[in-house]
Amino acid sequence: MAITYNSQGAGASTETTLAALSPLCPATVAAGDILIGHVYWEGILDAPETPANWTLLSGPHVIQTTVARHWLFGKIADGTEDGAAVAFGAPASVNQRAARIYSFAGRTAGTITELVTGFAATSHATDPQMPTVTTTLAGALAVAVIGQNDNNAFASPTGESGGNWVEAVAEYTVALTPGLSIGIVTCTPTADPGTVTGGSDNTGNDPCGVLGFQIMQSANQTVSAGVGALDMAGFAPTITTSSNQIASAGAGALDLTGLAPTVTASDHQTVLPGVGALDMIGFAPTVTAGSGTAVNAGLGALDMTGFAPVVSVSDNQIVSAGLGALDMTGLAPTVTASDHQTVSAGLGSLDMTGFSPNATASDHQTVLAGLGSLDLAGFAPMAVIGNVVYVDVGSLDMAGFAAVVTASNNQIVSAGLGALDLTGLSPTVTASDHQTVSAGLGSLDMIGFAPIVTASSGVTAEPGVGALDMTGFAPTISVSGGQSGPPVGSFAMMGVGR
Image (cartoon, rainbow, N blue to C red; front, side):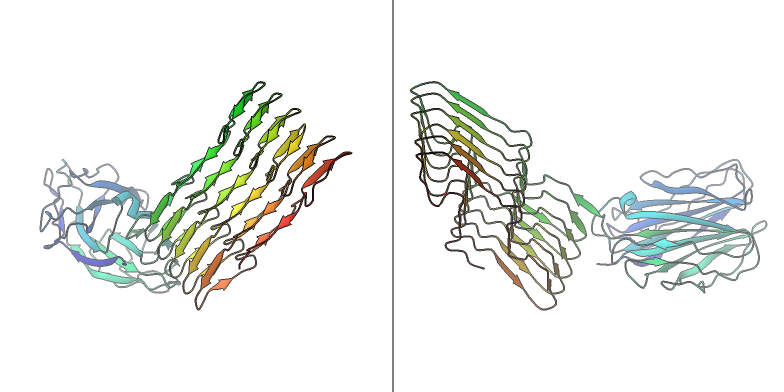
């Protein structure tokens, strides 16, 4: 929906001391309409009052140093204003003054101060000079109000670029002393949103001023990082066990089974990094176990079974990096175990079984890097143990990871969508004599990894969409005499589908 000029009420003027200045609202006002009041006052000593339930939006703006000033007031209508008088005060002054109320339709959401913005004013000795006005939202309307210290006729400005200023309604002019005129022009910039620059109105060579601004139909809302997200920065649980203890599954772990945050954003919103994401920066659980301890599955692990954030966004949105993503920067679980211990599957691992973020985007959206991705920059689990090391210690298990991205017409789908970025993944396993190092140590198990990207006509799918980026993947295995263990430090891609 776009902003449109709707109507105007009867103007009011006076130069009588203690006389009220009370223009009328338009005859018909709907709830949600945007009402704009333009007030012109000769001289620089007197000023209008702000009416009840109205807001001063801009002003005073001085015209030619001492000639006059003008102001802009606004209100979101509640539907009771049909033909109502708006009182701007009754000062003890004989200076001429005037005001008029205008209405605009098309608002969908937002306060008056959120929707009427971008003020720019000019002053000139003879003819109205149009200010530069920029709209920041498609469908927004550039508006300018004009005041001149004589009762001259106005016309639509000429000579502008980037749009076409049009007189919305004939000027309100009164033959006081020396007389005055106030008027309004509107423009939808050619670029929409865009900027209209320059132009002037050839009037009667009298001091004048112009105040330009934009009116938007809804506020440019920002959905900040962390909405629907789990931020684990600095989460560092510690488990210490002594001899002959059993440390069961999940100790020192983060279990996100069934975590499914949902973010729904409407038109014209900016959704910033972290929405629907899991940020694990600094997650560093530590497990220390003594002799004779049985250390079971999941210690120091991150279990993402069923983590399925959903992000739905509509037209004209900017969806930034990290939506529906898992950022594992700095995840570095550490397991230290002494001789004669049994270390079971999953220690220091990341289990992504069932991780399936979904991002659905509609026409005309820009979908940036990281949507539905797993960023493992800096993931460096370490297992230092004394005797027997089992499958998956220090590994990444991606069974069932199935990110889905659906994009429709006219979208730009950038690098990294549905991707696994393993930059800096460098698990380290150090094992001493007489140990058995089993399959999967320091490995990446991608069983069931199947990101899907669906793009329709008009979509630009850039490098990396649905890709696996292994830059910097460098597992390190140090083993001494008496050990065995293929395929230590391996990369298993069974079941990968793209």
